[in-house]
Amino acid sequence: MNGISTTTRVRSPPSAKSKPANDHFSLSTPDPDMLKKQSPPTATAFHARNLSDAHFLKWTAADALGVLRHHPLPCAFAVTLLFFMAVEYTLRMIPPMAPPFDLGFAATATLHRLLSARPALNTLLAGLNTVFVGMQTTYIIWTWVIEGRPRATISALFMFTCRGILGYATQLPLPQGFLGSGADFPVGNVSFFLFYSGHVAASVIASLDMKRMQRWELAYAFDILNVLQAIRLLTTRGHYTIDLAVGVGAGMLFDSLAGKYEDSKITRAAAMCNGNGNGGLYKSLE
Image (cartoon, rainbow, N blue to C red):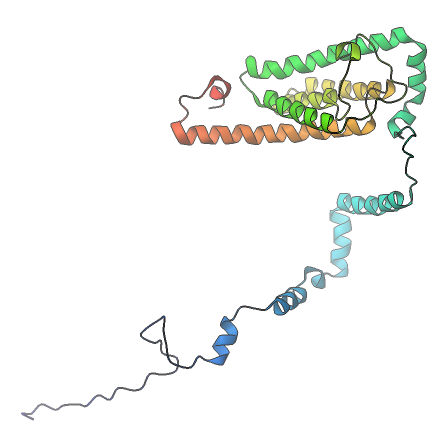
């Protein structure tokens, strides 16, 4: 018409793959294959897939040998686990009225007899140990009051609080053969918690702080004195072996927790007020 040609455009029907105009509603029949892909896996399929992809199925002989070569310590722990499982399940329990068995007491039996026969020597060693406790306390307080580093002080506060809770929760009997002394700390040994050893834990806290500050000679001296302190506490039956072992772990644990607490306070103070207006305890941390 009038020299203008017209072309009739035929709209092709939508293909099966075309997206419907309404994303949320469609009358078309869903593709069964798509339903299989979109449906959530059942518990059986989930477990089957995980078992088929299990890590141990990819192990080789070289991997097994590599574990022993590159990770000897965990392998040693695995062996000791099996050993102590056998010991635990075959060991005869201590009768209720019998004294507890303590390997540290057995190892220091000779020293125990020596101090029992020489009360003056026992009092001298108790006095020296009290001096060492004073050294620990002085250093821990010094790091905050003089040097402005509260981590060791916070760690000691955490540690002694937890010790008080646990010591009261389970009150262990005083070991048989306990050799008390008026020169020991706490003075006179009127009453004290056995679990866990605050003497040992505080010494570990002080030593860790010294190592952070690279005061290596002082730290090693504290470590040696701590070992001697532990031997004396076993010899005098002032603590069970478990008290001393947990004391070492408690010192490490609460030092780490105090560090995390300190870091969180620094981060919070910097975010809130750009390091201004903090109290005296954290002013030195900014």
